[in-house]
Image (cartoon, rainbow, N blue to C red; front, side):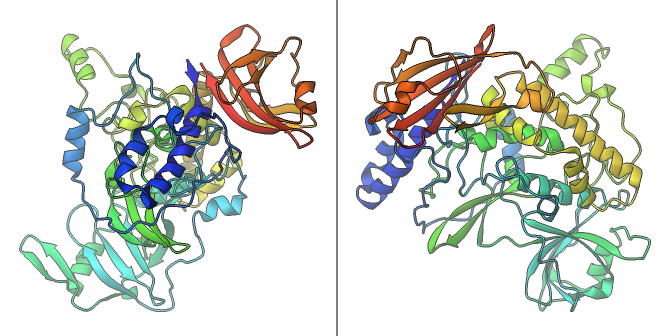
Length: 560
């Protein structure tokens, strides 16, 4: 199967520019612009500014509305229906919102980080902020509270006027949810997503004071909170050996909260939201990251859109939230052994159990877990990255293709053993054996992800042109995973308007053809690369030459 990332990147490129023009000049034609193919918007495959590294500046947005999403509606809508546009065997929909290299661009959804610009251990462990923990110099003023249910918490303002959300662990599993949230927020930040800034805090009850006229809701309705309510909430929170409560404090995100984004469709009041979410590579590849960190609660309710103003432009920014249900935790208790093994409601397993009179045993039931209350249930022996499931179907996950999986897997493999252990230490798990076990699990799960998803494509990446030759990294060789046999290359002259390839005979090395280095006019060339004997998994690298200028790599296609 051929992947046309360059064309899709070209479509995204055109759409951004066309939408901007239409918004300013022809508002009535906006819908036409979004549905027009690249052939109508422009005949060229590559443009002078390709490949784009960042999305064009967002259009100013004014009339956006807050919206709520019922978790029960979301569950049943995705369990009983199929929201969004789905790929089928006869109609494969490749990822969009990528540049001509097949990479998501920096912007409101995503920012390229660790894989492209290796982060130091300090940067990885600091996360998205790491410099503004709640001040201990004065009291924390409670301005909102959730005192009922299994996940109590507060919204508080510290002595410096900064607002934090304060969450806790369940009594039976000290450290579990707060450690999971702390650790996973750092991984997802390094993987490129916009997340909140989190801190582990230790405090006594006298650190908390009640704000004026703070209200709570209980069985009797709305009423003013009392000190007794605070005490009752903290009775559900474990203390450490020093008698202090442990909590996770997350700094409020900038901007106005707008509610969650969905994993399908578009946000109708956001003119910058032009690619259906089920076709975004950063959301399709999110499956692989969630499988790695066992984030089966990766649903829309755990996301947040905010209305922000940056560089004088108001627009919507998209975030991931609430990682307390990762790494074996389900926030309020250890995760079910079934979690990640199948959907909450799955007809297939139920039918198998009935048909075999209960003799059929699902694969996940063979997993074994050590008794570490601080990390819940996570393991690596039975884990299969291709057979991992979130709580219920996700349209973006269902649409993922081998190139989406590879895009994510190469990022997972970029974390070294030492980096993984350093990030796990930010969870401040007091039992050394539990901390070591969790890090070992993530290392083993990482390796399984690389092995599974590198095998589906030709895992070459980090292409560039150096001294007149194409150079790259063979990730299978780097990570000692899969086939690393000899490579074959064939060159063609590429017509940027018709997309026709004209083979160049005798050009079988990675050196750029001589004619490409001597032509004065702008020319394009395509290099098809495959392993000897495997023409199915192929990479096509496109480059532009312009006389005496250095040749430029402008596009990549992957086939499988």
